[in-house]
Length: 235
Image (tube, helix red, strand yellow):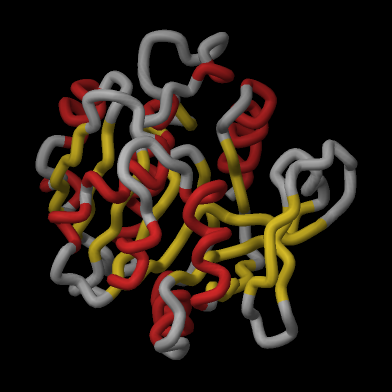
């Protein structure tokens, strides 16, 4: 796993979380005695992934000041800073030079935590040589606020359903992806979203889902941020 690089999407504005985290980027929101982003760094490092690229934007200097070159966590951290908001896909494209020579690479949302076995996820992806992307998915009790992923019996994704608001269980995108080089031609220039602009275009190429059954935490809203505090105290 030492050859795998991870792009961490940590540049979001976090507008819905401003009422509880007003002066720093949401990825630096405190969870116990550390920041949420530190939990993600520790998770990656614990599984042998030590080459990290933080895709920063809003209040980027705070992220870089806290994490520096990563040596405190025994990882290597580089930074790809967007000057204007580019969305998740735009941020990945901006960081292309850091993973240009990688046969595949990880991408993680910086505002969610998924209990995932990265080796199994990457091995699964490598076992599907014709696919450009694999998405880690997880089953939640209230999928209405996320939108769901439609999957065939072989794990190939058929499509994505929009948020419905209905309180019902389902499989959702867990915010952890494996991409290979084929993905670049499907990311448009300028601001763009992986979820809205890239994944639907990739479906014909073959996008696969790999289900994870552990903890999923999203800190996108004040209620979820409080839930994250409670969940991580129980781990």
